[in-house]
Amino acid sequence: MTRHLSLFLLLFCLACGGNSDDSATDNGTTDDGTTDGTVVETELTVVSWNVGLAHGYVPLGAARQPHVIAALDTIDADVICLQELWTEDDREAARAALEARGYNTHIHVPEIESEFKSACQEDLLLALKACLLEQCPETIGTDGMTTCAVDKCPTRVAPLGSDCIGCLTKDLTEHLDDIITRCIAETEVVPYSYSGHNGLLLATKTEMTAIAGVDLTASLTFRSYIQATINTSGLGDITLACTHLSADLSVPYMGEFSGFPEEQSYQITDMLGALPADTPVILMGDMNTGPDIEDIQIAAELADNYQQFVDALWNSHLLSQCTWCPEENTLIGPGGNDHIIDHVMTHGVDSSKVVSTRILAQKVTITNADNEEEESNLSDHFGVQVKMTLTATKASE
Image (cartoon, rainbow, N blue to C red; front, side, top):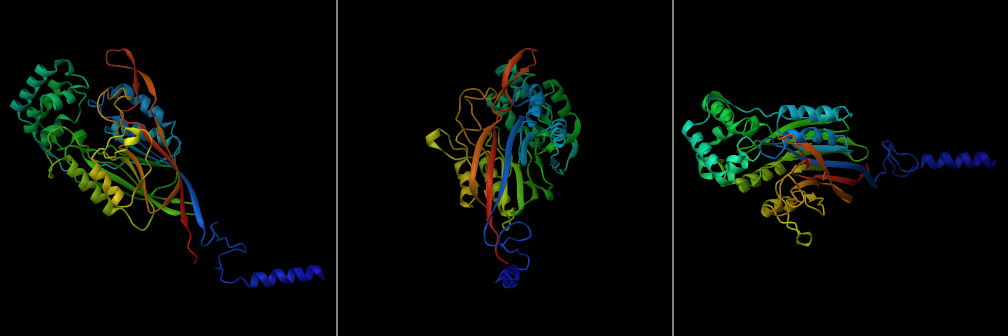
């Protein structure tokens, strides 16, 4: 009798499920494992790293490259955004290393119009060469030549024009005389450095959908962002964006704005206006802008531009350490301020549990162009790792 009564009561309770949806079980849990009206949590680890493989500009690029690729094997993250993979060889090496570990990868190759013509006037290039020979002859044929040209010979750089500078910076590992010969001859001309590539690679452990490469208005160096969607258990779709915005360079500005800061500001406005507002978004990359944090001696970089993210309710999960660190990084050297310009930002999610860590700050032993061993950082930027518990409330149906 007791068994029959218990069974009757159980059936009665199941039949009187109140306002529960048909997809809910007797404990209020839906078929996808979440509970109506309750908080859903998703663990996600995100890494952003500017690898600094700007050959001919950031020192020791060729010597560092194998160490950079090897360092990718040490990253354990759900999402990875890499910047400054400027050459095809470097991009493919990074892609192969990540795909060998099971990552899905995407590289966006911009479509840029080119012309077949002489990119530079010979007399202007010879004047630049003469300045280099006078001001810093020891840098010719080394990684320091570009910095010398910008710092010591700005009046010789300014009249060259974007087509010429794009040609000069196509391959900075060439000897100066070879660069001059190539750029005064008729050649395919792209008015951007590194043949107009954006240097980006986005990698995820889960499948990416809705992948798009979006180009931004820029000068000297082409700028884009890679956008994609991943699906997370419980929280659903999350939009990812991987980018590298314009830097405030000392080279003469040749774009359509009043300078590099204004160009970057426009890129931020354009990008934030285009990213979706109806799904959670994670934005990663070298933004070349960051806040002033006096307590830890972090200086602002284009503070008004960083404020655009703040005003648009983006949450940058800031480190307590710099990512651009002149005193700590062998590839920058002493002098200058510490900055946090590499970011992992979120919008539209409650990231109440976040642990931010600076990574990839170690030194390695490399063999330089003189066949001598020396200690070097992996990149002129340190990486950012953010482990976050993304939370959202599943609405009752």
